[in-house]
Length: 391
Image (cartoon, rainbow, N blue to C red; front, top):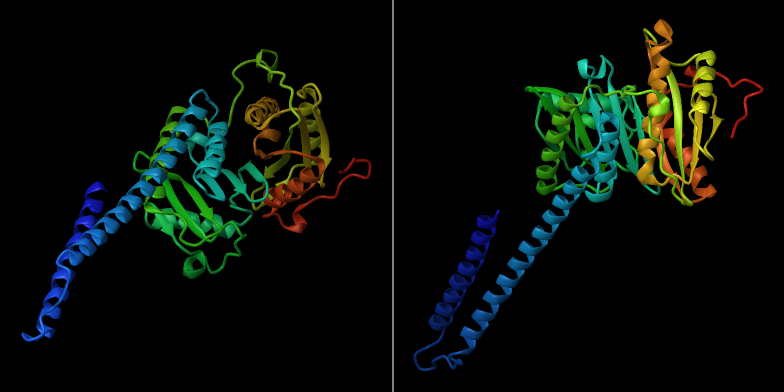
């Protein structure tokens, strides 16, 4: 990269010198012997030096801007490493990675997609983050991205076709995306495979609402990040967390005085032979009872829509939200293992967010429900029971 800029600076200076010499020769040719040129002998030199200095300054400004951009990307990568270094839950690691990408690398959407393989007990895993007016994070197993099955299918084809980083400047000009109705956060798109033992097991996907947003420098940093996630996939035992100790032995979140209101939107699903269907009411009741027993302090659990549960975590700041949600998921995994055949095909989808006030909570819930359940057909839902409290 340094040699490229050195070559650009040299080319610019050479162009100035050549152009200046050509102009001087033309002026001498045009002048007659009887009327010689009356030119300040030093004026042309001063003008020439000034142009050389200005070009040099412009080139150095470009170098400094590029250096600052790269330092910001490296700082973001370092923050990701610092954030996940003490984590051992693969899903929590991935959500932390997505959170940092949204904050530090400028993306408005980030997704980590993992195909069905032995690491995930044969189940696919989708983790997503969206940064619009409110940052939202999700984890689920149904094959959608941003609520779109078509989007997930195109991403899978991109990895199968190329197997390398694909930087798409404008999805509206790419015929591969003609059938997809994208939300506003997708205009430019970059997709990188997550490869383990020369086999693509997933993808890292980023998008932005501006065309041609992602640069070569983005691609370099994201390749490192995708390789890091692939390595973590090898190091961790499972994609889904399992209990390593009894619920009583798990550490609780430290008490922190905070006005933050975090929430976890929970949706329980059963994988049918043909399509994904909401879990039976009895299983949902059992899950509600289980999660209620695992609530702490001022936390509360409510029904949301007809098939979801909403856990409110007042006083839980964003930096503790992932740990709290991971322990709730661990409790679900413990319970699922006791259900025998009934729990074999159960899947838990989660949405995470932190809000500042009640008005923001309402908007966030609407956006979260749309993202988390956007792929469901109306005929897949089941009506709520008459005595079920709704919000």
